[in-house]
Image: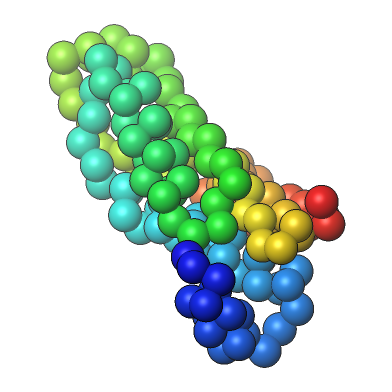
Length: 127
C-alpha cells in the first residue's frame, strides 16, 4: 500500500496498533479456514497445497510470514491416488502480522480437548 493509502486506511481504525494487528491476524486466519476448507487434495500434492495456502496469505497486507502444515494420518497415507477434502482439523497454521513494528502471531491448531480447530493470538510484541 502506498503511504497515502495506508494513512487513509489507518485513519479508519479507532483502536491501538496492537488491537489492529490482532484484527488483521484474525482476517488472515479466517481466510485460511473459509477459503481452503473443502479443497480436494491427495498425498501426492499435499505439500503443494500447503505452499499455495501460505503464499496466498502472504500476498495480503501486513503479512510478515505464513507457514501452513496439513496434518496427515495413516488412512491418508494408504491412499496415494485417492483424493480427500481438506477439513479444519487438518490445518496447522502460523501467521505473523506486522504493522508499524508491532507484530502479532496467530495460530490455528486442532484442539482435541475442545474438539475444534482453534484460532488464537499466541503473541503480540513491539519489534
